[in-house]
Length: 110
Image (tube, helix red, strand yellow):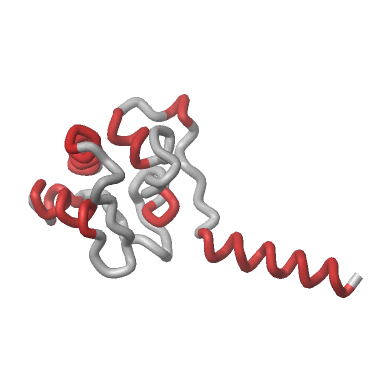
């Protein structure tokens, strides 16, 4: 029983560290950038894990709603490419067109 409790606790800690955030169900995703953001295009691009599927943020990642009013298109693109702070960089993981699609979608969040 003690071993089972340890395994359960380890699983809970791992879930908390992972952010316990799910992408938006694919049926609800209509924009190409939103699909990319929510991990439906590449396994190694999972923005939703830290920023939530709708961009509203989690304890691990900032709220991106209204980002287009606070940052320029270039600043948003650079942040995605270079990964400021704890954010991973996505240079080489996204094509220029895919990056533009994510930025277009983020700018549309109001």
